[in-house]
Amino acid sequence: MNFFGKTDKKDYVICVVLRHGDGQGFLLETFESSRKVRVVDQRAFTYTNGWDNLTYDIDELLFNIENDNKITVKKAVFFVYSHLVDLTTREIASPYKEILEKIVVDNELDILGYLEMDQVVSRYFTEKEGATLSATMIEVDTPAVSLFIYQAGELMFSESVARTENIITDLTDLFGRTQKGITLPSRIIMYDSTSVEEESSKVIAHKWPKDIFMHVPKVDIVTEMDVTNAILQSAPEFAFEEPPQHSEPEAQVQTTLAMQSTIPEDLGFVVGADVIQRHMPEPAGTDVYDSPMQSSPRSAIISPLVRVQNIMEKFQSVLSNASGKKPLFIGIAIVVILVASVVAGLYYAHSATLTLYYDSIELSDNLDFDNADFIEKKTEVIETEASVATTGTKEIGEKATGEVTIFNATESDKTFKKGTKLIASGSRSFILDSDVTVKAAEKTVTSSGDILTTTSKEKANITAEDIGTDYNLAKDTKFYF
Image 1 (cartoon, rainbow, N blue to C red):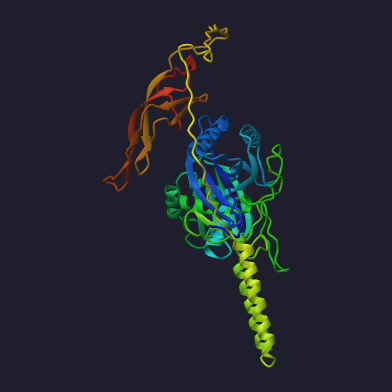
Image 2: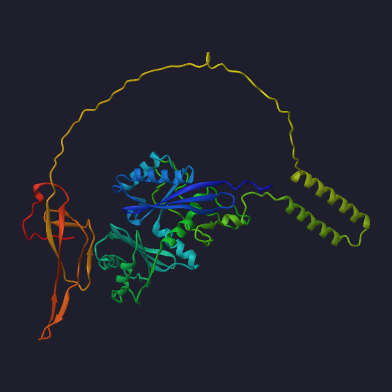
């Protein structure tokens, strides 16, 4: 029961993490006075048609969150993977920027800006461990792999390459692009849109040259809980409009968000601007963060109890200094303090309860429904019709089908999921009809001491991605995944 203070104003912010083919929405509940932030809802969503229909996907996400929580969300902030950003200008690349601008306008959102996941994750580990970060950070998404090298808290290198099936090849390419003289930290931090257990195992098992890593690298995987805590840790930077007030003149004012308070047309994506690193609080659990604002109130409101306590402390100081003076002075001081305490109590805590009593009156009236002139009947028939002309043509037909043989010459079983794409010559695409597992190749030693590898194979059915005679292929056509 808040008698003397102001009500802690509550607001909501939607944080949307955008990856290549899916995303996550976090509904944050913010409290302005206490500067607290907590997650009240978290949902994952998959793009229905890539980024082309992302506006409708986020609209559906907002509708479900608002409907289930009985609230209205107007503030939004985006968390994007680094391959969506030009690492030179730190501006979201086209056409992603235009799509985000359309999302903001169509959903009538007050955009607070955007943050890059590599910076959010690096600040999280810095604050979590209480030391400057020195690590090789790897960001893995469906279309790209990005590398960030931090030394003593400073970003020394950042680059992205298109992702292939072999993570070691991608990383070797990235490591080769680093400047000479930059030593790669042996600690590796990996995070992905889904899971990086398989990729991390390959990185650990690979024997890296000494000129890349001086020691065997240690891999830390960023969990889903780490991502949630990292977003919560960054929340005070964009959730509150005013920075903390400091009473010390030497205290530096922290910048909240470089893109805040911008118009929807530019979406807050300013060239060369991003969230400025500042001290963030340690997590107070898995879903609540206390901002530094709690240690320094926004206003100088003092409760009556504190005022009385200050008066008593001053009174004790006066008594200690007046021990050698007349008792009359002490008595007058006591009377003044008592009067001031009574006045303060009446001023701050005076209240009354009023009870109203009234006589009941019985009201009655008669209505004649047989001859009621106040009832009016009206019948109206409305006829309507609509039509639309059909235009255009559509080519129809059956998609070509066939059977392929998948050969496995590796030492481990390989599983290909239903829907995996196979490419033939001429860039014609076919899709696997069902899951296929090809066992590992067998190695035997001949009598002469040679190692004979017997390739494993498995047949599978495929279907053309589109119709047309171009998909009628000859026997023994070779495909690649």
